[in-house]
Length: 248
Image (cartoon, rainbow, N blue to C red):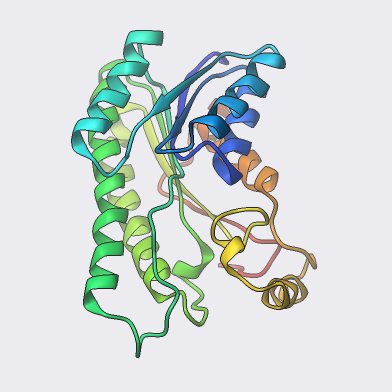
């Protein structure tokens, strides 16, 4: 079935924007969430509408309980329900070694990462259970399983997210709701890759069996699989999108 209502957090650029366009291209209604990038979110929505799709721009900080409630209420008021949540919004993190990492830095990243995932999931799951249909898709990273220098805060926080999703998947499965993780390697044209040197990106591409970095569209297609009916009997999974860099 198409015409599902899909919320994509952090959808103004990168993976989130590509996911919103991909889902809309498959016939779904998309909610383009952003925190403070209205112009970019509007551009994504305009792309969707120009292609004949339906898009709603919805501002909201996914680490704020009140704003998460308002975000979900806005979707319900517009389209009556929420069938799919794609949690892509990235919270800030330091790039540093363990030796230089403070507990405040690590604790802050862990708190924001898990706060956003918890608040969003807690807000959308009751309606999905009531309707006995739902798709939860969370963006993680291969760094949760394969460490890289300087990325300890991000990798540890995403590892916590991965575990959270497995527990959620187990609990909601009897109600027709799936929960899955999409874990790309370094993705071109994203906030994370923008913090890396060109030299490092070239090294990462060379170390990948497919000899390039992931692109937002590569990740978006995997997101769309889990967001649709084709992935309806897959839950609790961790799907690498990395050109063979990590083969679990």
